[in-house]
Amino acid sequence: MRECVTIHIGQAGVQIGNACWELYCLEHGIEPDGQMRTDSPVGWKDTALLKTFFSATRSGKYVPRAVYVDLEPTVVDEIQIGAYRNLFNPEQLITGKEDAASNYARGYYTVGRSLLDLVMDRIRKLVMHYFLAVGNVPVPSIELFIDKVINPKYYGTTS
Image (cartoon, rainbow, N blue to C red; front, side, top):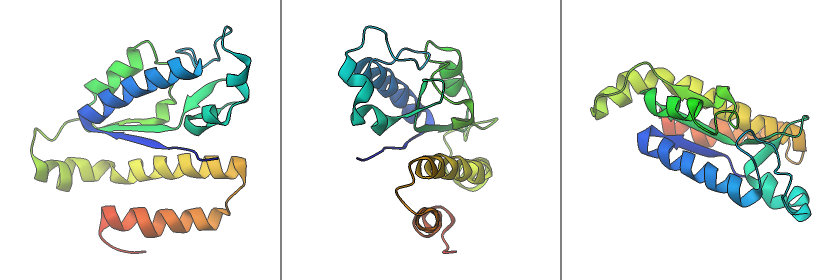
């Protein structure tokens, strides 16, 4: 079984991600509050496909395995006040205080760089939470993957 962690970055990424998660919820019988629809077919409750995109909580709520990131908060705020506001974990909705004003250097070197550690930490927590819960991959191998594969792409160095 494969599991997906989606990362939605920037205005377009957040808007497309929001539309995708609405569609995933409709396809899998998940209400906007994360609960399984009562009229969902019985097979959906047991399918591995549901667990590909969602994590289940002890209370029976399904939470998307997704991280939303944008330097400018208004697009992510639309999710936080929209119909699916109770679906997402608020820790996985990350915003800055100002945007890069369509300036690549400003987004890469200053404003965007300030969020990088927080974003990497949230992605790491999301991946580690899944693997600790399932227990099918040793934790050190996942930490090694994150440190050796993901970090050099963002920091330009190896650890």
